[in-house]
Image 1: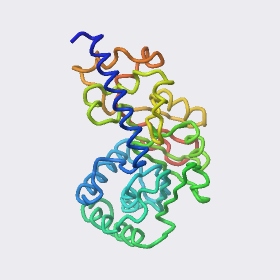
Image 2: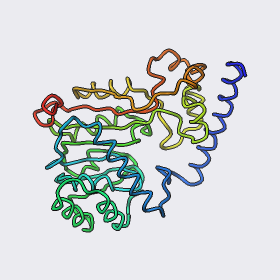
Image 3: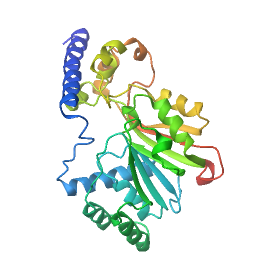
Image 4: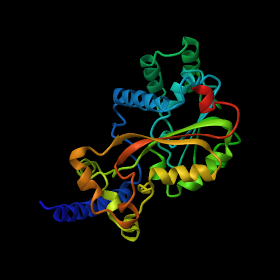
Length: 301
C-alpha cells in the first residue's frame, strides 16, 4: 500500500472511531476510565500498584512522602493511590474529579491493596487502613464538580504534592486547570502528571497512534464530548506551567512510536502538528515545582 493510500485509510477509519466514541459517550456517559473491570478486584489492585509506582518514579530522587498533603486530580474509579500515599507517611490525601466514579468504593479493596503493598512502616500502613475505613475522614477526602473548580473542590486545603495520571489530556482547558491547581499549591509544592498523548480508541491506537492529529480542529470538534483528548503536546503543557510561575519544569517521555510505525505516523498530520518535533512521543510525565523552600528538585538530588 502506498503512503498516500495508507494515510487515506487511517483518516477514514479514524473518523469512524471518533464517531463511535462520540456515540458511546452520548449513550452511556463517561464510565470506564481504564480497562480493568469493576468486579476484578485483583486486577484493580495490580493496576493501582503499577500506577503508584509510575508516579513515584518521576518524583525527584529521595523525596520523602512523610508529612505531605497530597492532591490527586481525576483519580477515576478508585482512590487507591491515596491509600498508598498514606501508607508511606503522607499526612493527608484529597482527590477531586469531574465524574463521580470513585464514590462508594468498597474499602475491602484498600485492605487488599495494603496487604500487597509492604513498603514503609507498619504503623503508617495501619493508620492508612483506619483512615480509609472512616467515613468522611478529612485525611482521605473526595470532591466532585462538573465545573472542575479546583480551589472550590479543594475545600480550603492547600497541598505540597499534586499528582495525576492520564488526566490532563482529557481537560478541555488545561491552562485553566493549571491556574486552579496553582492557587492551592504551597510554596515548594512538587507536581507530577503522567500524560497520555496518543489516540485513545483501542484498535486504531496500535496501528496509527497519532490518528487524532490527522484532522483540522473544526472536524475534530464535530465529535466533541466531555473527556475527548484535547490534542495538546508536551510543549503546550510546559508553557502553561511556566505562565503560572512554576519552575524546574520538565517533560520526560516514557514511550515513543516504534520504528516500524514512526514514518507512517508522522505523515499526513493536520497543519498544527505536521512540523512539530515532539510528535513521536506517546506518553510521559510532566514534573514541576512551585517556587519555595520545600521539595526543591535541587535539594532532592
